[in-house]
Image (cartoon, rainbow, N blue to C red; front, side):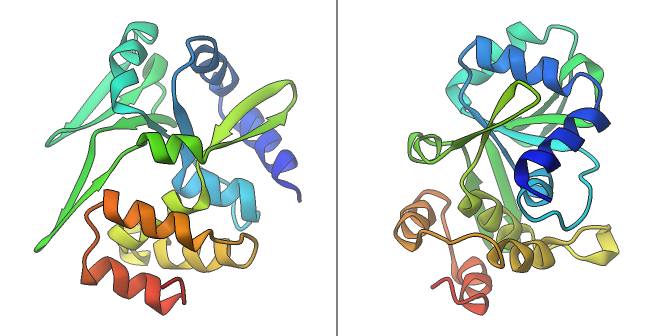
Length: 192
C-alpha cells in the first residue's frame, strides 16, 4: 500500500485524528508525525495503534491553549499531551531520555522542522518528520518484544524504503547529544 493509503487507514481508525491535525495546521503549529505511526505510514509493516506527534517546544504553550480539554503526562521535563483526552493521539515536547550514562535530547528543532514533509489523504494535510527523527528515537530507546515494541525492527523496515540523508543525520546527532550507545546502533545499520 502507498503512504497515502496508509494515512487514510489511520484517519479511519483513530476518531478525531483529522480534527486534531486540522487544529494544528490552522494554528500553524510546528509538528511532525514520527515513531511507530510514521513507520506504519511509510512501510505498511503493521497498523499503527496510536499516533505520535513531535511538537516544537516554543509552540507547545499554544498547543495547550488549543486543546483545553486535553490530559497531560510528565516524565521529568518531557510533556505528553492527549488532545480531547484521546490516548491514541500523543503530542510530545521537550523530550529527554536517559539510559544509564546516556542522556539524550529529542526535540523538533528548527533544523528538524525544515526537514518535515507534507502528506495528503482524504483532504487532510499532515506533516511528517524526516525518517531520521524516527531512526534516532528508536536507536535511543532500543525497546524490544519484552516491552511490546519493535524499535530495531522498525529501523530495519524503514531502511528498506527510505534513503537516509547522512549529512542531515550527522547534523541531528549534534543536537540530540549522541554517544557511543546511539552511534553503535546507527553503525549496525551502516548509517555511519
